[in-house]
Length: 245
Image (tube, rainbow, N blue to C red):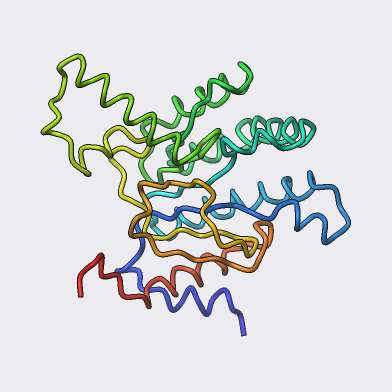
């Protein structure tokens, strides 16, 4: 039996999630199991990124958020960080034309200021080139932390209050969202984490209050289209009550 087609055929296309967020974990473990350097896992993981972007576009998903590099990842060995940065630049240079052609809009979550100027230049060019695309919004979380995002939003709100741009009475949950990196986007319906780890690692802390979580016992390089189809199918079997009965 073809598992891929089996789950794809079961998906209800009238009940698709609008926003899928993924913690792409397990590249290093995937490589170590095969007695390969960790960099080989990251290289293979990039292939899954393009597969997932393409399939989300094909399915009609509106937003896809990928946790690529966290504020905590700077504590990793410099050699590995340098390789990840090279992979990022290579990914943009090699895949940007395809992303743009497929009407995908690239959006960055996180503070780019810590990156080298050449990386910032490549990322900003990609964002500018794709800014009018509308088929799929691809959020890449780079130097991102959920707590950092909330602190940043709070500072921006305080600044607007000080400058009399808004009043305290205007601020509520929906208004607060305007100050997040994901402003004007719907909150994630689904959060996926690969590698078997069952934690969120400072990812979209504000936005995932009512998301459905899927912790998969596979490493990110093993996350193929059929894995995505199964998650969407399982999501459609759940009853999302949002606090109601």
